[in-house]
Length: 348
Image 1 (cartoon, helix red, strand yellow):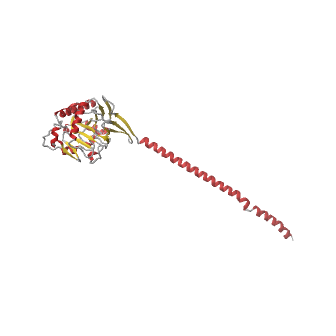
Image 2: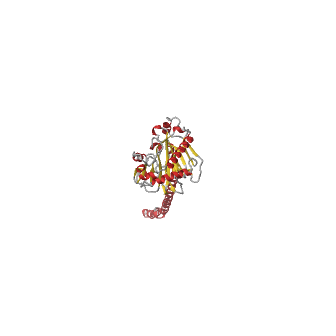
Image 3: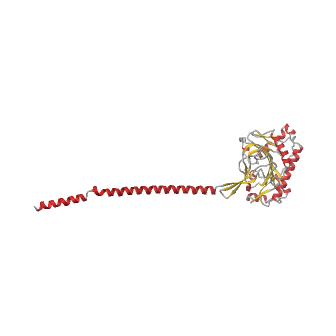
């Protein structure tokens, strides 16, 4: 019997235990905690992603700033077309190879390397006569690719994709007059004197050298390597004879042509550089030492026609040449020699 009475009390206890152990009333809070934890985890994950993207954007911004401040090209105008300059100079340190070589020539060592520009060396009237000479010469031949040259010393004249000897053309006898000869020689002498004065040289130690020539540039598409005048280069590396380079401009930037500015490329450390521009002006003369300190190029002409003369000088007598004699009856064909001497790097 006691077993029966004990059984009734045990059932009540078991029921309470069962109710206490029923997951229905106690699981719900656990579910709520799991759901809250999942939401918190999701929020943290989203925040971490935002932080990651913010870091990426910041790093990209920093990289862009570093790039544009480290790899920079600045622009500077050395001489504009509107200016009329008595003399403007920019001294530079000579490149080591140039200095080592030129040190061999007594009386021809510059006090310092660099560049100059002046509108007072050659008169507009003299420039006009030389422009007439250039135009007359180029009527007898022009490059098919837009960069034509006329070398009065060798007789080399661009024609199509080749060179001819202008002194072999019968028409040349009617074009080159004694006035042209005299003005050309007189201008060369004045430019030579200006180089000697600006770099403090003995003028007698400075010699005209090859190539010295007229150039005519247009926007025609290049046909040969001779037409590609816009590549940066160093004159001394192109022509061993060069020690000093000068340019005489015969037409005006912004009036007779657009584009076609002369550009010095100055390096400043490994990644920075400055492009220094000269805008051509009729009768303007620019001169510079021909070493690595004066790397340069010419912008492509955008429209019109650009005329100029390159007059080059050497300190080495071995490379000296006489003034042109306009020997129209000379039987020696110098066109091939002149054609080989004028490449894409020589056009001013």
